[in-house]
Length: 387
Ligand SMILES: Cc1ncc(COP(=O)(O)O)c(C=O)c1O
Image (cartoon, rainbow, N blue to C red; front, side, top):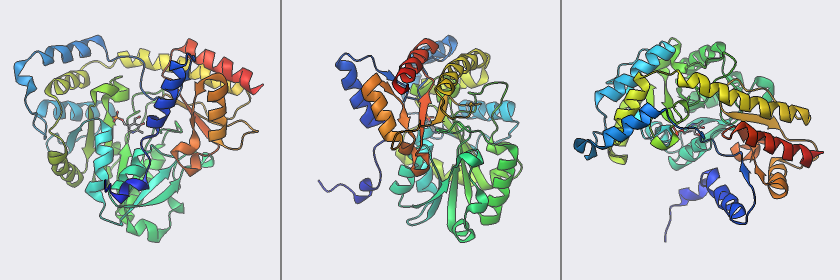
């Protein structure tokens, strides 16, 4: 079969190969603790699951949905951003619904990049950005996220001739995989910089509602001038514990929204109506459940952070996301050697930082999507392995 050459430019999503290995280990009877997967082990609140079930029973809800989505869901998205971030977006022209933010993350490159155009991509980063640029035929200029800069991009370090040519820059705070958060000052500088060089800012914000210690995540769109230069993706996946629903959104710049709507009118037939109904109800409803949910993640975070600190590892206590990002212990060649040795010897899987890019080397990521007792068990095994 003559498969396109462009498929050689990127790897399959990093979870795909590991799932095969971990499933085989489980089949062999090993008690594997998979700290790799960023999929909440908790469910959407009962009333939202009920709304979905009820909406499925409506005979009118099984047709092709409108790919521009009926207004109630878009209005609910705009309302959520207004209440949560004080951001005003016109539901008709400045909001688009997505089949999970991954849908938008993928198509945004086709929307913005012509063959050979430059995209500024952070390193380490969520791997879909890299694959998306390559599939669209764009060129990646790496923007290193360094520990000494709080894992924020150093915009001054981007050469002016590269900035001049670049079409887009990815930012993702709270960040996966580093769990870093952005400051107001960072967004203000970013917006000035994007205006100066005419670069579209693509902000990926799916962890905005998973925050600890009274920290409240910011939105790129809450700052003046943001809508002129960019958009933001968000999603019900992590905010509402609903990864499987594939309900996402993008808000902001009208031209980008119109371009994406045009692409999506061909690439999908819109979101299943019952999901639109349930997601609308969720966004319009109470967010009280998030308080308890975040307390739960915070307790888990403390189990892992304290465990790793006791082992002498270096890390920043995360203020958001359900990830912990830490330096690998001394004595290992690199993050892959460390994580695969840990997997082989104590059946705990953590993701090597290098799987998120060159600048992820030297780190590893743990996801807090397991009960505290299970995380404690993983820390105990790791502590024994390292001593
Ligand atoms: C940074 C980041 N962006 C986007 C996504 C995709 O989220 P969704 O479920 O909305 O497609 C994830 C999922 O883990 C993520 O970590």
